[in-house]
Length: 211
Image (cartoon, rainbow, N blue to C red; front, side):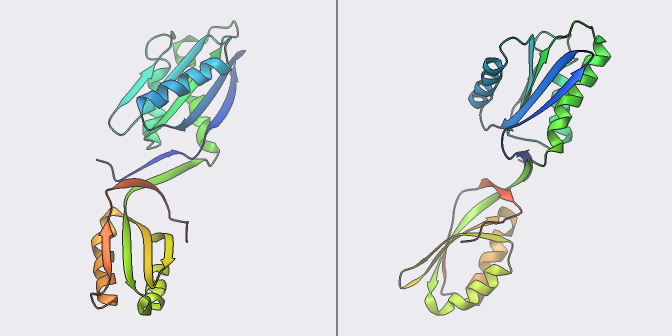
């Protein structure tokens, strides 16, 4: 299982005109095939007069594509190859085409679909997600100064802080760093900190959120 991948930070579009044919690419993050199907239908509804709705998507354990009526191998597969080349997971691209009356040929179609899909990655709206776990940490307030300094210098995200007679923290850390981080917290607090770790999940990286 991958420890990291790239995906779209938000819905994004790009446009291309090639020999009078209009191409509109749209990409977004999806986490299930039902979400991918809904996004494809959304593009169909937004561009009802188009002739082709080519798509490709990659999930954690699934990848699919469709040429949507274009000659086999000229559309969906090239778009899927763009997703692979960019290291994308949990992501979909739909390229809508309005035929302009001029045939592009198989090579021209492949280049146009690939180019229009590639344009989505010039927007800066792609993020990296890494496999992480939450750490729930509780310690006496006397350790707060040391903890605050240590956490501030660590590669973690502090997502919640509560003071209720003691310090209760919620942090997010990359999965491969969990054991070392907890060991250092244990040493810092002379074994008096309580820690609990969540199941793994994917989280945006580099970390930026601080409580």
